[in-house]
Image 1 (cartoon, helix red, strand yellow):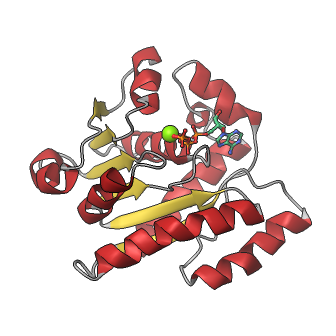
Image 2 (cartoon, protein in one colour):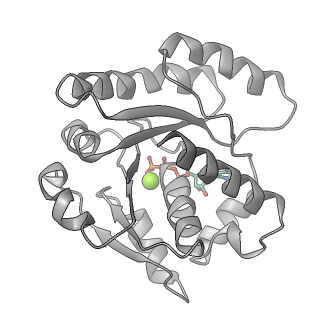
Length: 206
Ligand SMILES: Nc1ncnc2c1ncn2[C@@H]1O[C@H](COP(=O)(O)OP(=O)(O)OP(=O)(O)O)[C@@H](O)[C@H]1O
Ligand SMILES: [Mg+2]
């Protein structure tokens, strides 16, 4: 299964969610490839800090991913693609390579409006490959705030399913990334639990 995290908007959590999804699959004993398709190379930089590489990370910011994905994915149970912001040609190629495109966004109206562009790119690709799935994922949600609830209402306009499992605003995501790690080490912690729930939901819908 090929999961890509994509949003033309920058800083919404594509890399954070890619790393955590890939890492959670690896912890479940599955063979995972994480493709860093962002010329900024953030996931690759993160992987260079890792102490114990649980899975393979490769850098491939090329608009030919959709042509090479079959060969790349051959030896893996799951492939996760971390997409770039802004680069439309690359985004198109990533979408065509995906079984499911996950569009992360933060709970703000600006993010909802900015995500429409990525939704349109997916819809365009679906005319060639109707099997490509798409969903939105709320990241950095602050519990019990009106904006957290309102974002779901605003998202209805995009007419794309929204994952039920939100990812919260937690300093642990940034802190763990800074040392080449994830929040998944402490299995019973709140962040680890929410990532597990998130990945379970992804598995259910794919
Ligand atoms: N749930 C979260 N809680 C706290 N901080 C977060 C969370 N998700 C992401 N961040 C932080 O927000 C910043 C942007 O996240 P990230 O790099 O994952 O976004 P991105 O969409 O990949 O950005 P870019 O478009 O530049 O590739 C990072 O500093 C990251 O640590
Ligand atoms: Mg990124």
